[in-house]
Amino acid sequence: MPKRYDAIIIGSGQAGPALAARLSGAGMSVAFIEREHFGGTCVNNGCIPTKALVASAYAAFMARRHADFGVTVGGTIGVDKRAVKARKDEIVQASVDGLTSWVKGMPKLKLFWGEAHFTAAHRIAVNGEELEAGSIFINVGGRPFVPDWPGLKQVPYLTNISMMNVDFLPEHLLIVGGSYIGLEFAQMYRRFGSRVTIVEQGPRLIAREDEDVTDAIYDILAREGIEIRLNAKCLGVAPRDGGVALTSDCTEGAPTIVGTHLLLAIGRRPNTEELALDAAGIRCDERGFIQVDEQLRTNVPGVWALGDVNGRGAFTHTSWNDYEIVAANLLDADSRRVTERIGTYALFIDPPLGRAGLTEREVRATGRAALLGKMPMTRVGRAWERSETLGFMKVLVDASTKTIVGAAMLGLSGDEIVHAVLDLMYTKAPYTVMARAMHIHPTVAEFLPVLLQNMKPLQ
Image (cartoon, rainbow, N blue to C red; front, side, top):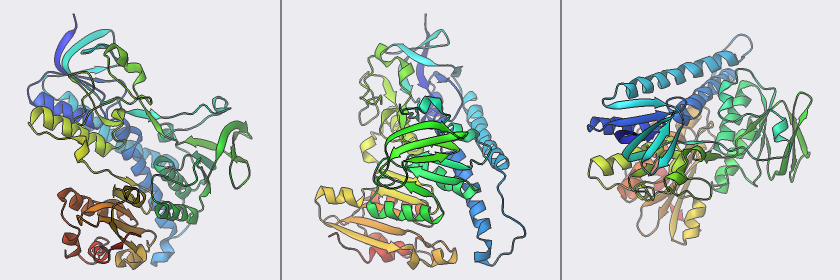
């Protein structure tokens, strides 16, 4: 006979522990299943460790610029990659330990370590034991996509996961993929001291963004000596001189690039294959993402999918919001929906990009009348004080409702100041509210009202 619980949670990514706390706190018995380690991608090989590495890379970058600030430093600025990794590992371990202790201390919760799979709609097998519950929450996340390129099985390669174990400095790092993961690692390792080449199959970096954004990011990275190859087709790899040779049909440059190490950063896929979803009758799309409705319910009553696995967002903050939506609907009689949230995310290069809502291209595609405001960071006093004047701020407004529909903040503190715009978007207040606000000087955000006072019709 299967062991009966009120709820089963599979996976300890961002949504899992918080949901477990709410359910167990409401008096429900909870079976919590994790196959590897607490925290999922964000804690172990995503947000937390990469931003710790970004911080070390920024420190190295600023140390080399000491003379720009009138500071004298004796000797050569170097990077101890083992010490960098050790710092990152310590930060990660503290997060993992905290999560583990929190979950283990929850009342009426039983923790199971192992691989879970469905045997029926409301029955889960783990380590040869069967568990049953009226409510099941799938939170198994995703993993790096590895393509089937010619020669790839014959060469060693890295992903964002295996990069977390690198305690040395690659001489020449080849990065395939010009989007968020690839660009963050590119700038990071260039600042550590590696030669870095980005190879992107499309005509632009981070193609989802507007051209002015991608052009500015290209310039930011190129200024630091990062080599960028676009329009790379027919990719293949082979061993070469103790490293790897990447062949591509690029519109510019030699067809073969030889590096010492290869990082694949070309996307992610959901961890759904081992769940035996067919046994439960749970539907997925053609890419393997579990199909859910606006309240994150699957087609099987009593089964929800949260986080990266549902295809409704690939960020830690969307996973957390998934938890909030599910908990609100189940426990708070608060009918929250995925469609109520505004898309927002950041690219954590230096300077960072903060994004909210629609791009300029998407606004144009709607055909609506719109207003555009744009300001270069060279106008911002705080940017000059910090000698960080690259980038710009851009805001888009619906001309009829006067509400902000999109923003791109590429520049100093762009990942933070975007939230001021995002919060106004949630209120649905007209942009003139912020345009008339008094902000603190000297800050980056003080120029948001100035920008909004100078909106022009989108041509």
